[in-house]
Length: 177
Image (tube, rainbow, N blue to C red):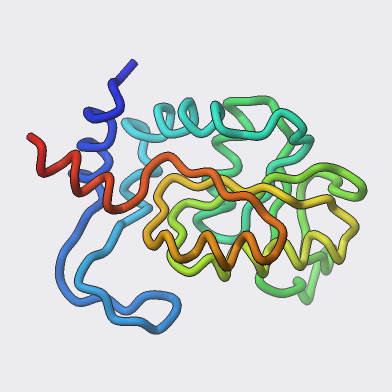
């Protein structure tokens, strides 16, 4: 088992990039956290172990939005045995034509799983979709909280966010080498 500081440095070394990047929000950033580097066999088990410790006890279903949240949800479901549901950005136009796939969420306590949170918009939008499908949503978890201001947006939607690290913590652990 890795100590918190060692784990933080591994995450930082694997996923932090500097340069010029356009975020989902349209904002330009000179720092970027490459979540896909974390979804590799050398990191994913440790990330799932740590995330499993912050899943609320009442959780009956884990839910992730496509793409990163869904991948992490699958791994975390495998690790914990908690059923997984997946939310599409929009309904499929073929097959089942569902916006939700996977586990039944109706009247279930659902925890949203996200990789990196910047504004909280994805969590709030996912919660809205889940609630329209009669899920009970009041919690979310993530690996990296990029901007602590997102907490206010998420809490205003009635959701408590738990996270493994803030981006600032990762940078501090990295600088302490």
